[in-house]
View (tube, helix red, strand yellow):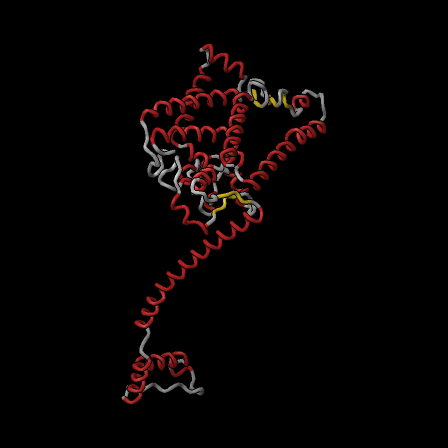
Length: 385
């Protein structure tokens, strides 16, 4: 089931990558900087501003055109896109995004060259072969150049861009753009392709935020009751175990809680590896997609487990700190018996004569106020103790 699902997903990725590269040439979507004109589905997409400035239409017509041809399509597109993410997660990233297709392709080559999918992984899961390094670097540079040319064709007429490029007559500005963009894309593909998807892509970030807001959204569920079956996990991609962790293109841990799976792209590769590992041992997979009430139970169960873990940690810290604080209180707290004996001893021993308290009839002119007399009496009482 998962193998067929991965095959369909790669077909979607290949088709969308072809659409991404060919869309400017077919005038499906591009913005011509020479004409300051947006092209959509083979036709110029205008808001009527040029006609309004020329006096051919009035203010009402141009306002209606802006609302119907700019605001309404943008709102429908954004709301529909976020609704899909709210219900199913980052499906666009895992099933359509051209950048993610590049990430997975280069991951497969880097595993052959280095034994791991990223330069920043802690340890290799397989033995690398240095002979795969030249193909990896050449493919990364070729894809970087293809992305640079495609991006330029979204801004300038594709016939001009490709025609000048094939003839070797690109303008200085075009040549500089292609050189810089190729270098940037190549470096990103080699060193930071996973980091960009996780932390640098705004489209992916908003999808993740919408997904996290829905506790019933599709999530990878883990059967923790059978966690011991993970000990015998082993696949061709991860002979040492933890196959689901090893194959994740986003470098996540699929058995973790949803909050730590913030960047999950719902590619299903972890499910495929789990099915291969457990199926080879005549067991059901421990990972599966869950939606609706099942996803809600999964989310609540993981949250309760996390709260319980935090509570146990707080209980342990309280157990350790309370005896210390009580021992400190005993050190600082005076002994009641000793204090009582001191009071009784002070009552038996003669002490200095206490000054008489002023009477109500004494006047202020005798040199001492009532407040001063009371203050002196308190001082003498304090000295006795």
